[in-house]
Length: 151
Image 1: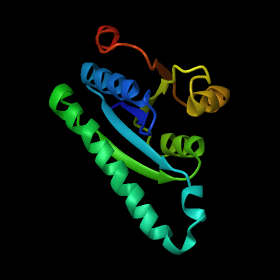
Image 2 (image 1 turned 180 degrees about the vertical axis):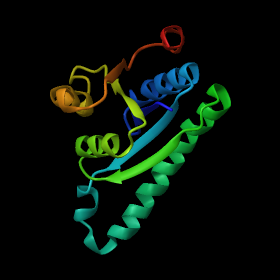
Image 3 (image 1 turned 45 degrees about the vertical axis):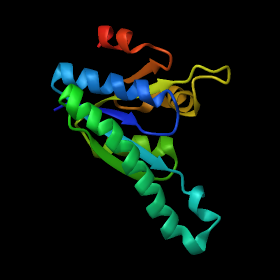
Image 4 (image 1 turned 90 degrees about the horizontal axis):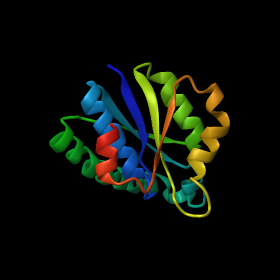
């Protein structure tokens, strides 16, 4: 089964990427893998409580994931899987794609503010030639209706 890989982060544009991945998976009989990457520098400052901070980060991610997963299961009939990795987001995306041969498309949301599409879209656009799968970039201000009509 082909899976759509989508990145869960705190950005607003993440929502449209989630919607797009779920809708495409539902329409094509595919699956969704939701990847959340925790940067290691989040724990380096506080070495004494690093394990506690990792556990708290994981709880936050799992709670955020459950919101998306419930919507995907209830509305789209898609049961997503969650993968949590620690490291540089771009490197961890490449590693996840390499480790899971069922992943066929990376779905990213593009930011709409003047600073650009976002750090992931920018970084992965530069290195997309070495990624073994296509990238779909979903505009952050695309309406739900438009998303549904194009998926």
